[in-house]
Length: 358
Image (cartoon, rainbow, N blue to C red; front, side, top):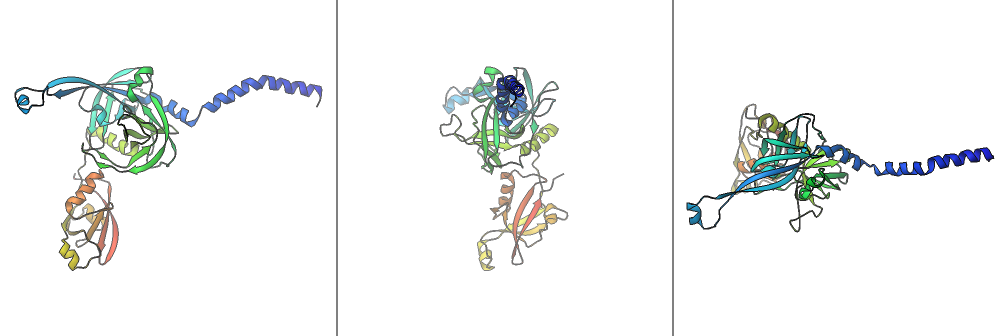
């Protein structure tokens, strides 16, 4: 190598060496996770709630008869996410329940009074509205397109930490499982089709977004399993965003969720003696004794005399069992109820699309 070429090469190394290395390291710190947090973070809300609770000063029923309860103010907090530039905020119903005043704080510390557009206790979702425009908002993804093991980020306001730095707290994990059903709770909430994650979700995270690595909201963080009852043990659950989008749309348009439906179907319980006498190869079921013309049942292909053995995989023995399946799976007009039937000595599966009562 000539002396001239060597000098040029050394100059290139000197010029590019340290700065080039630092630049590479800086770029390597920027990952899909950090970019997703940067993208969604401004749309994450801290929700502070003033509540009024009534308590009796004594447990004696006679005392309660003569003296009214005393009203006490109470503060609580949770999380939410702005889903549109005109200030609609999605959160959990249990975050804002019994609120007398709701204040929403966004990244940077800007505070807004929030109005309740609508609440749905069954899904544990609520929609709020901020006055103003051009709010930062999050992109909503597709919770039907999830991969077990893909990276996710839980953003929110655990333990009111949002107030310390005026920005959301982030925790990272993976999607541990999907389609987790817990049924109807004592509160009336139906927890079904939930997304499970090991991203740390703690008190105050409720209502905040679960975000994928491309910066899309795929769920609304809702509850955790906790051994101590105080914090995360790596088992948290989020409402799928596709469910939340449907609920939010109804709340925005009407302020409530309409769960009225029709099947156009009438059934009778098959007694054990009939089942035994007919020597059916099953021990439960209801027989179809009426189908309304043009109804959802007729469109599904049901006929009088069909025996319905199960609905959405759940064995049925009465009409109330079918209604219970519809209620516990939170099915509504337009949703599909899968029926296993017995007809002319053969099993069949039919898809009944629930009709509306309009």
